Length: 336
Image 1 (spheres, rainbow, N blue to C red):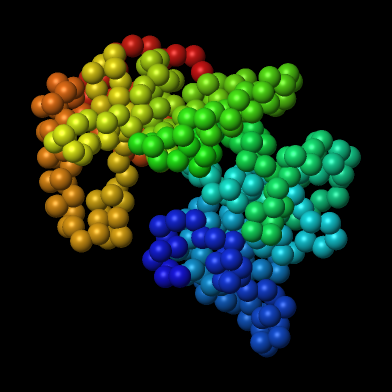
Image 2: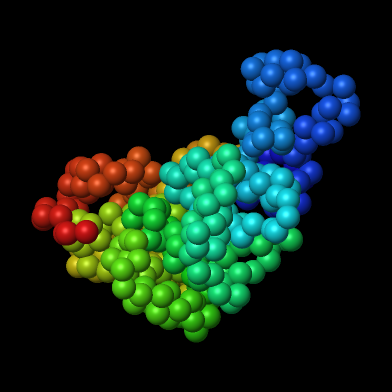
């Protein structure tokens, strides 16, 4: 698999296993502890966890989620005795879910109550775990999709929680223009059932996230933008709204705010500067195509089009400032 391609997506468990290098292998090849430390200091190797390494350039090519997946794979390969059950954000990366601005410092596992044996780099969560909450993905045991989402949306920041919930629903519902509501609703019902459990840490946030979740969001930036809009008191928007183009094709708008007659398009810089995403088009061609598209949408609907990039919604204050600057927000924040 081309290294460029790994920068664009999650690296699979098999791909990660292929690039991991064990200390046993290095020792067999004649590496001493001194040469190993020198290689790490010189940034030729990166230590993933005790006993496991990867070439530094390969590590820097991996997106954040794939880096944590590498840490999970290394932890699985290091386990002795009973296999660990990975959970929370560590299970999320095995399911291919996004970690919006999250960088886990340790690998998360679930253990039975009163299991206090600790291992460096492992964060243990004690609690009951029925068999139905345990699955195997690519040979690694982790929590089920519903259990994973439930654990994550209780324990991370709200915007990151919504990105995880939306992505989990999207993994079942499919593409927004052919969305399978029945498949996604099954997960929503299960999550709602779990959030009725009183007293669990973060349960109030989890209930709010389940209410907001929508698998039609295509990217974490759309989820985070919706989260900020909710915090700022906007009514629930529609997602991936089709605009008839020529009787045959359609333009799809990311977010529609009916009360403001405004479409919001969520764009990352990669759309314009990344060669893989642009294909055969130049950056100028992409910008011109976007302008043509916006002009058509404005002229056809009478609505305006506003653009949001990651820095505009990174914090609530940044979102409020941006939406005020474009004349979209003139009210008080809602309570979250």
